[in-house]
Image (cartoon, rainbow over all chains, first blue to last red; front, side, top):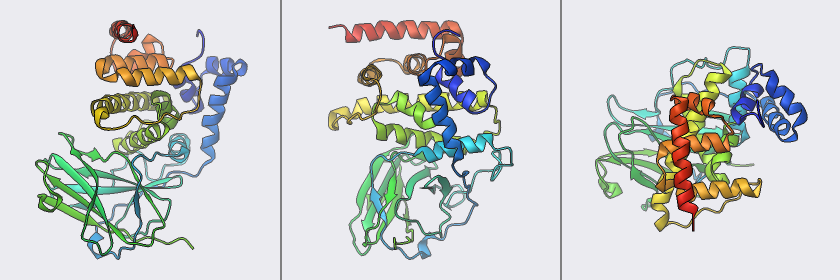
Length: 222
Length: 142
């Protein structure tokens, strides 16, 4: 091996693969050693909690305010660390890595579906349609457009008639589309709602061929 | 690990974190059951690199209507400059060349390892990198 090992080799070593040449290099290279130690230190975080599938009951949920659009929010070290745990744990994962994926949160047979991913600290889960979200939770939306090509996501304050657009764009031919960016649950007192709409072409929100309104209860900060 | 990989590719920290989250969700959805570090890292590097290239090219196309993001990734100035330069040229360079260049330049992979990640031959990778170097040289030449 000449020069530094590739970052992938460092990653493989941090994941437990026997790579003596990487270890030997890191003993004398401060930068590579620091990279390895940084990766390994993440392993101490709690494991990934996976959700169980739950049928949607979103239309019956009371909805205090909670959402704030962030535009671009990322996954903290927690998610990465969770991956490390998932890979390295000698105990069976929870659930097994080859377990079926959770069911979509909102779906009709053959039609579009919406799933809400919830990142809370180091836990990434699928919102079950019932559980309250908390300030600081980060939310992403996955849509199965079922042939529709134009996606709109909007929010509004509780009691308001005006929807504020959060995302509009083409979803292409993908079977699943993860909406870019994320939402962070805030501590606002006003209630807000989320609307996901699909149509064959760009169209006003109220005329979209498929619409799903979501309401998530929120636990308020003490 | 995923976050560090994404931060090496994108100059904007928030965008890198967003990309890491997208990669992580895809890993979760992928149903990968093989826990071998070689297989997992291969999947992660391939997926995150392709997502980054898509994002770079998409952003360049919409840049006329939006202000550029403010880079705030801590690190050596030359690495940050390289990421900025790559982002500036992303829409002028084919995706396959960008992928090979990212893996080679930012992830320090040799041609054989890049070929393993991209599922191609070393010869193909060598050609991609040669073409990338020529385009890059032409693009930055005053």
